[in-house]
Structures are given as C-alpha cells and as structure tokens.
Amino acid sequence: MNEAQFRGVMTKMKPFVAVQLATQMHFFGKTESYEMTLEKLAKEHQLEIKGLETVEEQLNLFDGLSREEQTEMVMEVVRKPSEQYTETLTLEKLYQRQQVDSLYLMIVDSEGTIASENTRFIDDRNARWIPMIETYMTEKRSFIAVGAGHLGGPNGLIRLLQKRGYQLTPVKL
Image 1 (cartoon, rainbow, N blue to C red):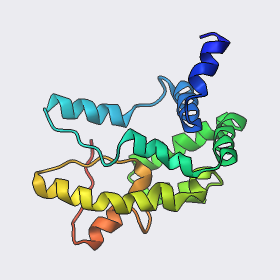
Image 2 (tube, rainbow, N blue to C red):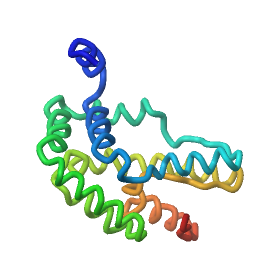
Image 3 (spheres, rainbow, N blue to C red):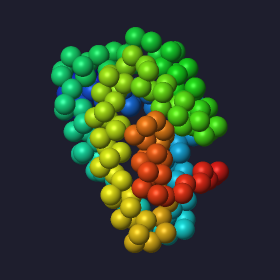
C-alpha cells in the first residue's frame, strides 16, 4: 500500500483499529484465536450465532474518549511493544488456567486507557448483557462466549449471573 492509500484507509479508522492491527501483526502465528475456534465449532454443529452487541456499538465505545486519550491508547502499544506482548501472554495464561479474577485485576490495575475507563468498557456492558444472556438461555440451550475481561471481578458476568441464582460450571475446551 502506498502512502496515499495508507492515509486514505487509516484516517477513516478509529485508533482502536490501529491497535488491533498492530497487535494481530505482532502475534500472527504465535497465538490461537479463541473467537475463530468457537465460531468454527458453532458452524460445524450448525449452531446459531448471536451477538451481545454490534461491531458499531463496540467501536462507538471509543467515541467517548477524547482524541488525546485515543492517541495515548495507540501510543501505549507503540512505545512498549515487548511489554504489551508479555502482558498479553500473561493474560492468556491466566485465561487458560481459568483465573478470571486475576485476569480482571491485571486489566483494571494496569495504567492503560481501558483500565481508566473500566466502568464504561467492562462493567456497563456486562450489566447490559445480562438481560440478553438470560433471554438467550431461556429460549434454548446456549453457549455464551465473551472476552475474558468480562468474566471476573465484582461486576463480572460470572458474579452477576450467580447473584441472579444461576449455577455456573467452567467448561474445558
């Protein structure tokens, strides 16, 4: 892609997309995509896939950040790529060990943009998702997959569902 094409494409993207692209390029071939694995399994078993929010809703989360905050979020990745890589591997290990509360604490205790906006990026979304999850579960047997950061913590999906009387059992895939 030449510079003009790059500028044309990148100026239309939200900074978060740049972060995602940089992260994917750094990890390409080094980690497994759980999302793609779960999607493949669902298709193989002809299971319906529903979302808890749209891509537009996800991207709109970043509209609440100032231009400076969005720039800083990108720069957090650019300034310390090896630190970001190590942190991501640690998060993945915590997830694999099902230590979701430790994973949640690592996210909210970090100095990054997402941590400072924890309520909007994690807690508020979890609260919005609970009624939808309950609807999905009452309609038919369901498998709910979310980002690991949404599972642990006092307002994580696990605790919110337990407070509503659900008994949850981890599943090993």
